[in-house]
Length: 279
Image 1: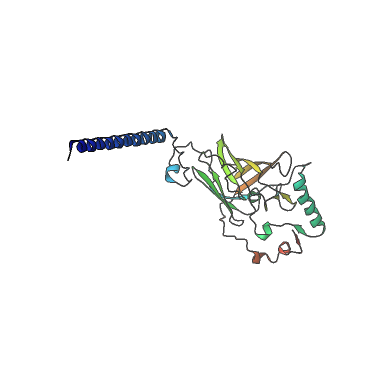
Image 2 (image 1 turned 135 degrees about the vertical axis):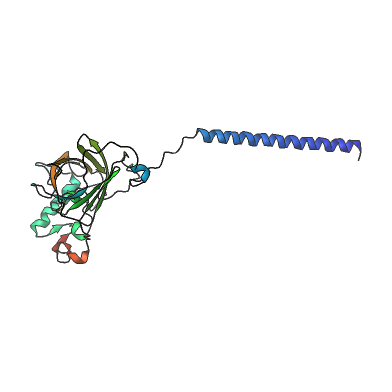
């Protein structure tokens, strides 16, 4: 091999080594930048623990002023329905249903009896029917199971906030968040469905997805009765705030049973027949 050829090959090797070194440096810079970016990225928020997760149950919390655990039965002198206040004013959308309901009653019919057709009663109706409700209170939640259609309501007590309405899954019982104010349990419920849901089923007053309910619950008479003050707003259906107070009594000699709503069991009811139930 000639000296000239050897010199040319040596320069070629040096050039390749320089290129590789430069490439390695670039990779190192990119990797370093990537690691730096990752280290600066905010950590994802911790996942919300379920109310029955042992780690959630074990968190230290103040002792609750009272325990709702037991079976309760609605027992109000004002009756089992949420009658609107005197001089109430409905929105045009709700007025259509209200007027149609009045017309149906005059004709000996009923208007959109969804509950008779096995649609869930939902809140607030679930909280006033003469069916017992079993309540189980835990540090993170309160479970309410109504014998009426075995409807389940969960009150979240672990400090979480309401789900953003843009991603919340609406339901008939809504999303209930509770907290203590002295000796009063305050429950705020929203994220309801937008149809087949009623405030007053006999007077044909509907609820919408804008329904917002605040309950203030006190235990009275040495733990034998509950006083529940309701404040209801639904700007899509009526003006202002409707307020009512209902009472419950403890029934230690009662349990709840499985009571399902099945259309074939309701055939004796005129409201399930199309010529009586105005849609």
